[in-house]
Length: 397
Image (cartoon, rainbow, N blue to C red; front, top):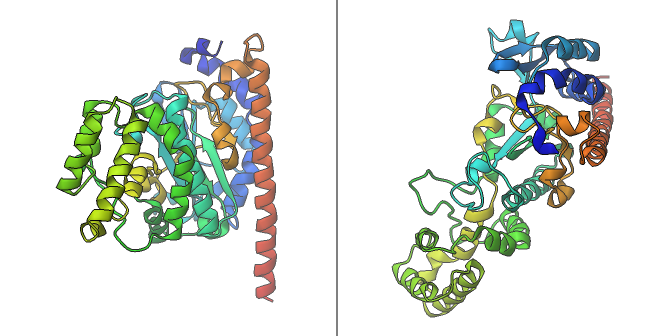
């Protein structure tokens, strides 16, 4: 069974995993595209070894050297950094960064104030729906609003997802440019002591926000049912703090307290009270024009770690790295298939290497599918890079 994974045996299993399953060739081709026009050796890699020994500013020249490093160092975790003007072991002293994929890190721990099924490192299929919503919203925005074409989604191996945008225009963005995109995608603002964290104003909603709400609406009732956002007295109190008008808040509280502790039923009654109040208090509602939408966004909209996106110094776990705590592979997946993603179907190093496990065949097939999708992504990226170089060459004639 998958539950038999033992972190203490990771050092024994990793050499075989790296030689048999890690897609070294296509991985190096992906990094090469991300480095272009600079050599592969200018890219920083990081290894976390046994006993949390951390090695930064590693570089490789080709596939063979990476495979040798894998067998020699046996990294428990592999992270990817930026492209420097020279080998990172030399360039780090001047900290001159030339390029890096635009990346996003979305972690379920950032949803702990709203998810009720799990906390901290624990994850289940119920709270995974938050990741589905995040993936779908961010993916379509990157493509529709910014024109990016090469967007790679990767399961972190435990409790989140990573997004890598490999378009040339994304790779060469400076810090303000990355920050502008991150800020554009962030709608939830404020710290732990702030109750209401979404403010949409009273103007017409931007098309990207309406589009995000369309995605949220697909999943909202299911998430509401499963998380029971307002299904207890404590959660109801937290919910009522999101209503800025005292009169409306009191009306909602009186109605909802009389109802059974069903979040869906309470939500429908809240919307009914809100609609009635809107019709009777037109002027007062100008400040709460989008209250229903704001609450939906606060509960379900993607929560991004914008520091990872803005900064060049943040490393991010590599696709197909093994998560040491779970043994799961950080597999690549398609955004349109996020809703079909099942945590128990993610390959583990144990199920891949031990063909006596009940999950072995399924997990091996899922690993092959993930590698195939990664290959297709890299082939598409290589074609785009070839066209870009050809166009640039013709301009210089």
